[in-house]
Every structure is written in structure tokens, then in C-alpha cells.
Image 1 (cartoon, rainbow, N blue to C red):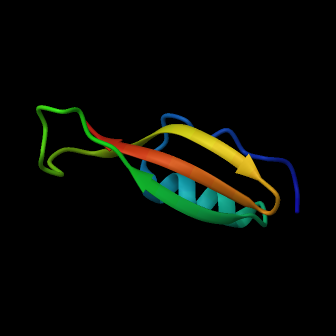
Image 2 (image 1 turned 90 degrees about the vertical axis):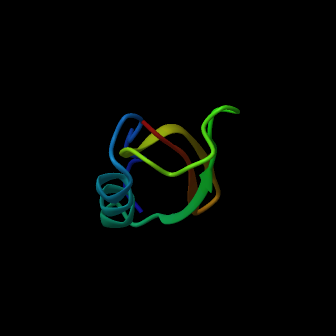
Length: 62
């Protein structure tokens, strides 16, 4: 594995590609503001957490 890429602000597809290219496994968690209950808009990474060989990204829709 190489360095941990900083993918905050990336689109979901860009983030997954960058993380996997660096040799890490990816897990994804979704979150939405309380008043927004649909997945309209563009998916972006708002947080990332590293643990062992995996990077968890938290995504939201804007």
C-alpha cells in the first residue's frame, strides 16, 4: 500500500478510483441532511477515516 490519498471533496467515483489505485480497500457510508431525503445532486466525499487496510468514506449529495 502507498500513502493515504486525501479525497475529501472528490466525487464518489473519483475518490474510489484514487483509493483503490493507492492499494487500499474502500467502504462507503451515506449521510444526508435531515430535510433532504432524496439522492438528488452530485455525490461528494465529506469525511474519510483510515483503519488498518481500509479507508471509509462518508458521502453526501449536493
